[in-house]
Length: 272
Figure 1 (cartoon, rainbow, N blue to C red):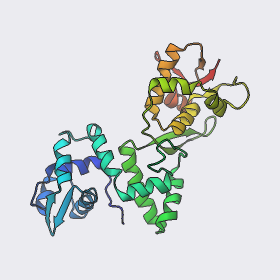
Figure 2 (cartoon, one colour):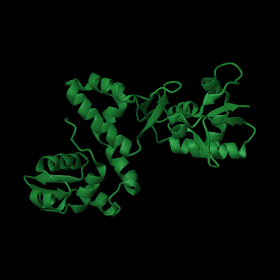
Figure 3 (cartoon, rainbow, N blue to C red):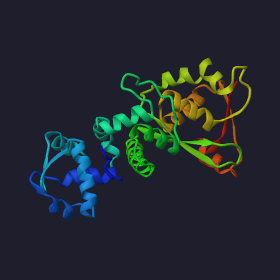
Figure 4 (cartoon, rainbow, N blue to C red):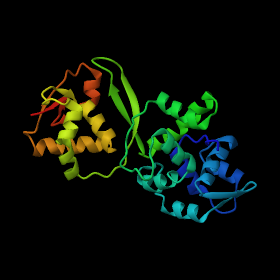
């Protein structure tokens, strides 16, 4: 199944909002922000795969599912308040299910398994193994799918520091696990996690906060924002468990990846 060339989920949502029963292709084109019939057909193809519409020739009708989703969409242009509905629909798509299973090794029976954080090249390589199509098409199709997943907060980009003053690489990991602050508090000071991050010996060395954040987010499938929020709370309520140190703000990665507390940027952490 060829992946529809749909690059903007907000446009997809806005398209559904203007579709009525017995709407012609030309009427939709005139009312939507999509400028060409070729692009419109790609968006309609995805609407059809999502079971939002059915088409008979050039006439489009809403399905029962499409009518329900349309009635529950917010009226704004963005998708922030509609992500839950959209995620549920996209995760039912076979091409998304297969992508997550084969690329991110995620199965419905293994909701707590978050084994990988992949670069774009690694995503394309894994996609190629099961799609068995040309590399040009692999790059295009995988890009559309992982961009959908990024927009819907199903996966997230993690910056990976490559050493002092080196360029920052990016990898993509799955998020979405629901974790309470109480769970986080137990895990962040657990022996198993500290030994994974600081080594098997008694942890004494400073480590970059982005490094411990990446390891934690990947291992427990949580987002960067949730990690940062919980860590700030933990440091306030447990001031004797960790020490913090600031890095030089002349380094871009320090400005971008530090933890901000009371208007100060902290880049290094170690357990006491």
